[in-house]
Length: 512
Image 1: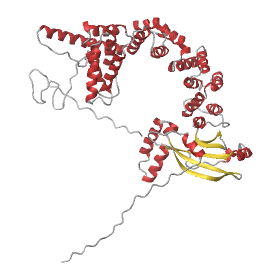
Image 2 (image 1 turned 60 degrees about the vertical axis):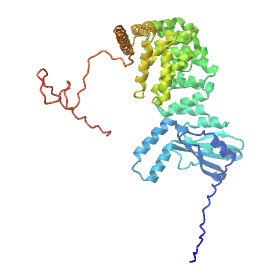
Image 3 (image 1 turned 90 degrees about the vertical axis):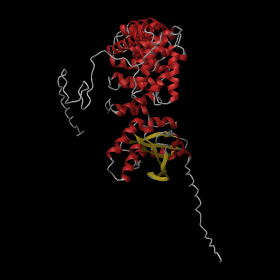
Image 4 (image 1 turned 45 degrees about the horizontal axis):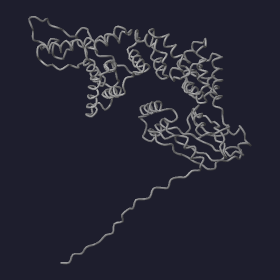
């Protein structure tokens, strides 16, 4: 029997090579480099490039349309809000239209024109009026002359007041003046407008060159004067610092508060005397957290007397703890870096990795190290700070609070309870006083229970449960049972029947 084998040849598809990357002229590469890469939206990319198009009156030149992630233009928070809003509102559209609308919410299209310098010199300012933007440009986009490069005059169409940053990155000269554009726009918009914040940012971007413009806003009593002064705090030049210090003596209360806040938010060595003076004036009367941080940033050793006032009569608990840390730093006895690192390790229990075994093990070691430290005052400060810590993550703060209680109740000779009662007796905020009193009562009860267990010969470990604030006990009623644990329908001779009315259904509220 003969076996016949038929061989069939099968063509195996070879993987095709990727298409070659498009190459653009050097000026397009420079325009792309002006936008940094985004973490969420990726890198900017050229959506359209035409090397030779008619611009106006026989003038021809290249133009390109760049697709930029919106968070590089509007910020991450505004972009996410716009994307979520567009995704919800446009969810009933077909897929193609939905993707297109979502792309408009998450990306911005910026168009550039590169006009030869010789043609731009002939056309003059009329050329800017005759440029026609692409249909993908936003409604609030404006055409601006960014400046002149080596061989081209660069024009751009992008959202309003977003071009000064781009102009600075490209390092172009001879373009539109951002200060004049910001001042012109501020005369037409309200102080609460989102464009006002962009104008303030533009003024701060120019640094000392914007002082004269802001002085004009102060002279005419513009509602934008406070926002413009606050924005100038990002400038570190000596001229801006001297100018802000001079505004503190202004009779205009709005100007004074704006200059004061600008100096506190970004501490400067030249304003060292002002920080000490403000701390002495406000200590014990109102919150001085900003003044304490400023004094700590500049190392103001002259703040010893105001710090004593804050420690003797603190307005808030956070101020007392911060003042105590600052006094130790200024007197040359700071809290050791090992204890600070241990406190930060304990705070990791309130973070996203609190359930990991390694995090728990390191936190337990850190708590034991703090409780056994020789510096009792530093351990007490860290213990109180951890015991009153509040975080937004549910369940995280309670673990850290118990760690703080453990540290306080393991300090020698009841130092933890004494420290807590001392702070509670001097603090002015009622909410802080109630929390400190609850902690002190809890520490006293645990200490008494531990002493009784030692007298009776039983070894009972110290409890680290959460303190209970004094108040009426609230019994929870489970369905089908009375508050006393007896089934409904079973009569007890010593308990009267309790009728519980069903809860009324809440009214349904609609957004319309």
